[in-house]
Image 1 (tube, rainbow, N blue to C red):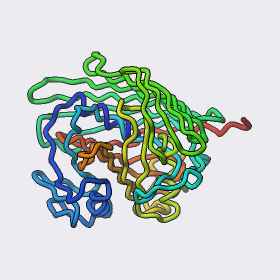
Image 2 (image 1 turned 135 degrees about the vertical axis):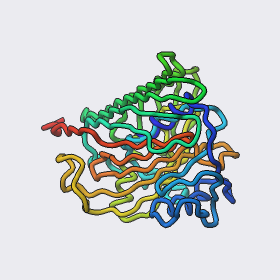
Image 3 (image 1 turned 120 degrees about the horizontal axis):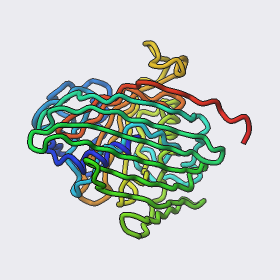
Image 4 (image 1 turned 180 degrees about the vertical axis):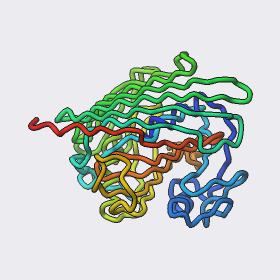
Length: 343
């Protein structure tokens, strides 16, 4: 889900944002800040040691506020997507044979989230909405559908209804992805992104865009597709790995792969009641994900999100920061269909 939320809001909402000043322009430069926030060791207004410092309004743990990307990319495309193959922890190159992990721990699901305004420090007066996330196991592939609907009111733009639809079909070996994203504001189509991407046995990848324009881009070695990305997060959490930095291509934007820096904390049995009976007995942990462009001047994250992930790929307790406002995502209902008897 993470990619789904990132794109949509930044296209619709041209908001001011707080900025970080990294000492070095890379995901690694944000590592210290991410770890401090995810652990709660960094209090609002405190400095991010050796990496970043925050100017302006303070935010509580679990949220880093990033400036908008250079192109006004829509941003509400990122909060619930499971993904599945481990790439380049700590950003170091990893042979393709070492980066492919199984997605068998993931499950089909239909999750409905209620979205509410957690904090507004600028142009946004109110915001609320809902998000539906559906994953289907088709035996050889994962089919996903995600629908996001947010109503907001701004000081200078009146009422805005933001709607995004994101669909994918991803092979379970993590080597093929079909994608389509449609973003609308007040019923006007802002952008359509669609195409196919593939990765060969040596890890060489390519994406063939159909929209917004026909073009072909290469994908760097180690790039993961969305379901593979989630499985990588879960595998790292279960091993006790504190952070990973896989490349991600999800098909939500026209610019190819992006870098992610993921910090994990507190994996284990739940200490409070499960948000759904379907999640009872599932271990879980906190996750913080920062998304970066791959251009030389991409020193700041495009978007960041906090959530709690369960071992089967379901997420809850979403915290999404869009600069001008923050939204909280609460799991409203969850259905886990039975696994197919045979494929």
